[in-house]
Image (cartoon, rainbow, N blue to C red; front, side, top):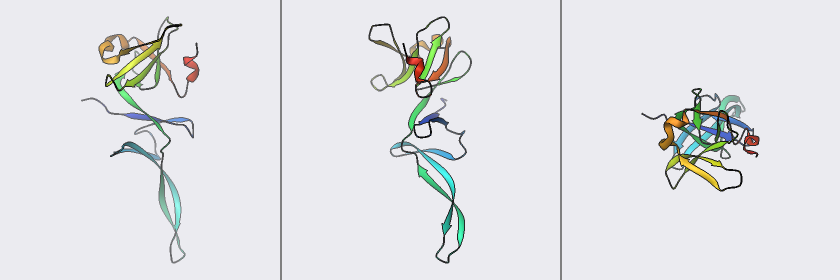
Length: 146
């Protein structure tokens, strides 16, 4: 069975959140897709004037979600959408994306002055084992600079 995992880029706190690894963030699915809520301790004032501890939450609607491809790089690191990959000895950078038309994860790369090339990951599963995750498009945008 395939692992279904997500991570999310928080573009307010500028950090990556991983499902199952965050103590104060809860991920779940609803009719609109994946949702994240951040829990925080709060105090509620009662009608009687007492203050009682409670747990509040806020929906994190600003997150950018990325799904796990169910593949790992040459070092055993999980590969997610948005990851930047490289092959040893090459300056070329590859970006993992979801392609709606193909209904598949793809890897795109750009030759110097040509249009980007793209291939479906599942068709190159063995070749991908020689690639290494070196960052992602959110935390390491400089990796995509030519």
